[in-house]
Structure formats: structure tokens, C-alpha cells
Length: 339
Ligand SMILES: [Zn+2]
Ligand SMILES: [Zn+2]
Image 1 (spheres, rainbow, N blue to C red):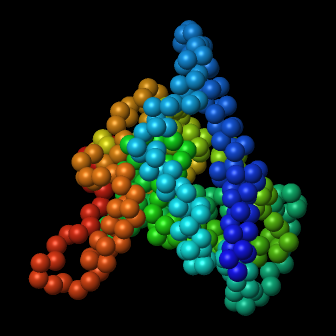
Image 2: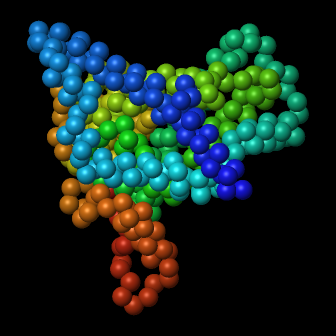
Image 3: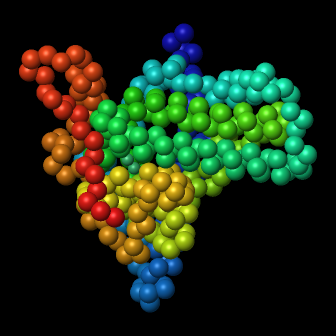
């Protein structure tokens, strides 16, 4: 039993680092470094400035960020997520294929077997791949918006925002409780979309995927997703800034400046932020100077406190009123002062 658990954990780690479609594969991290360097070279050249090896080195391996206490906390949470807590909570995750199968079966029970739409098989795959990706993006935006606006969810999501520097490891700076709710939200919304797609397009239509991950998401993982948690100010502005969520968009999301609070909740696309009024298109020049929550959290990189305090505070919040109980034990991120 124990050996089986170790073996499955090793397989999971191999998949995480080596599977081409994994969201944290070594290939995708290397690709992010290449994209970052290419952007640096292009921008320096377009401004007539020289390209130095020192500048390239600081960009690709910023030691002052990698040695920061914030990154150390990210690394500890990363290890806990992939080895320990994620596995303990894994039993609770909804199975997306199970949801897809039941949505398809439910539709057949309610409306009878639909004859699949007469579209070319390649077009059917393209439609279901795009629809599933949009469902993922919507689910991501919805959960993230809820995490910023509901006080209890913010208690857990706050850990991610206590980061004071950003590296690709920061994506793992999440509370396991938040991770569990997040994955279930994704599974339900994407599963319903995929189930409806199979019902209307035919049960045999599969999403175009790499290592089980939607190919559109894989494309973004190899280009901009890792750089969203980085120091590279790569800003999409104008129309592109309303369609795609550039690294600068997400750095705005982590800014201490109140005018940036509760903005840019999407993952790869900015369209849902645009649609629901939470978009902040960054300027071409760096406009975020400080990251984190300022003085709101006393020990932002204390991992033990980060893991247990949200649980204490949530339990306290949910327990019946009693003499001496704090009136507002949880608080949401302060609303932004303006656009
Ligand atoms: Zn957030
Ligand atoms: Zn983030």
C-alpha cells in the first residue's frame, strides 16, 4: 500500500516535470526563459540600446529574487503541494471524465439521442477544443473573482497575494483548501461544457490535447503563463490587452497599489475581465513598484501560519456568536480606489 503510494507519487512527479503538456514541465519553463530573452533583445534593439550578457543573466536567473524569503516560502509550499497535502486532498477531487459522461447521459435521458451535427470531424475537434478552453478560462475567472470578493475564500487566497517577489514557483503559493475548491470548480464547469460538446457533436469527438491538457492551454503555458509570475514587464496593450492576459496584467493583480486591487482575474485571456468589468490594461512602461499586501499580514512568509491561520479564522467565523468573539474575523481585499 505504502509502496504503491510512493510509486504513484513518483509517477505524478515525472508527469509534472517531463510530460510535454504539463503546466510545470521543464520544457515549458525553458520555453518561458527563451520567450523572456527574445522579448528583452527585441525591446533593447527597438530602443537602440545595447544588449549585455549581464542584463541577459539578470533577466534569466535573477538571483536577488530567487534568494528572497518570499521565494523560499513559495518553494516550501511547492514541495508540500506536490508531495504531501495535494495527495491527501486528492481523494476529494471530482473526476472530470465522470462529469462528462453523466452530463452526456443526462442530456440523452432528457432530450433523447441527438444525431451528431453534420460538421467535418476536424472542425468538430476545433469547436470542442476552443469551447473547452473558453470554459476553463471562464471557470478560472469565476473562481478567482469569488476568491477576491467572498471574505472566507479571500482568507485562503490571501496566501498567494502575500508574495513580495514573483517567480514561476509562486503559482504554487496557494492554500490546499483553495486548491481543492478551485480544481473542483474547474472540473464541474469544463466537464459540463465537454459533456454538452460530446452530446451535440458526437460521443467520439475528443479535445485536441497534449498529455491530457487542452492544446490551447499548452500553447499559453509555453509562452506567457510562467512569465505572469516573473519580474519581466511584458505588457499587452490596446486591443491585445483586452484579449490576452500578459505577464504585466498579472503583476498588476499582485500590486499593493489600491487602484490595482481586484483586477485581472483571468488566466490566459483578458476577455472575461473585460466582459465583467475587472480588467486593468497595464501601460507599456512598468507601473508596478511593490507587490504583496503591505502591512495587512505581519509575517507574510511564515508557511505554518499561512497554512493554519485561515483554518482557525474560518472556524471562528463559522462558529456561533459568543462573548468575546471578534466581530469581523475575516476581511476581503480592500476595494480599489478607482480604475
Ligand atoms: Zn488573486
Ligand atoms: Zn498570481
